[in-house]
Image 1 (cartoon, helix red, strand yellow):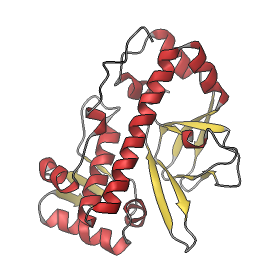
Image 2 (cartoon, one colour):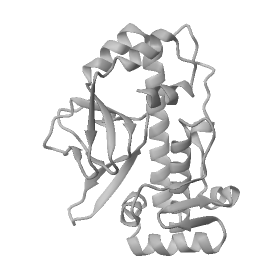
Image 3 (cartoon, rainbow, N blue to C red):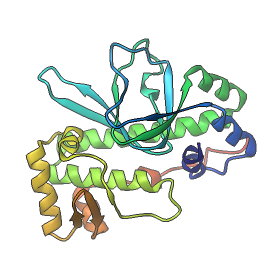
Image 4 (cartoon, one colour):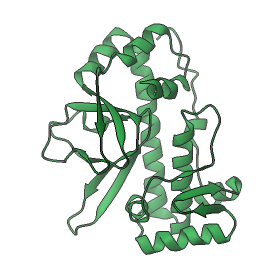
Length: 243
């Protein structure tokens, strides 16, 4: 659970008791192969939640025409399945996109954790609200910006999410999504994604080596993507030790 603690520790210094509460959420650790499905919407119940220790996952919904919309990306330190908590049936398909190590726990464990320590609930809520803001930004981007802006914003979102649990930020990495999956996440075709990646490379904004990219001009990428780093825009004045 070290990556979960690292992520939440970016928000506020965790006490020993809070660290124990978080690490006590789950005792079961499982490994999943790439392509595994964790919850199929309308089939499996949503009782299980997952903490990502290693690997990458995404949530998606299948559309009537055979297309797919990727709605959320999951990284190390994330809790997967929280969108399903209020419902009797899972609302999304969760796909393991690279070999993953996950901690598994029932949703009722969250209730017990929140009741025993209110600050744990506040930390959890803050990250949930922030992730919803990120999702809202992507929806606005898809609905109201050009394709190249959507792609730039997604690259920066992935960068911010990856760097959240790192001591030093990294700007060279593998995106962790195929070009078809990128298209599913930002409403473009695979051909369009390929063309736009090439445009960003030719303009000197990114460098590419196979599936790896390097951000060569962060400022221009942020300008193109109209990007708002929600992780750097937190107001924590309300967040006190007295909670």
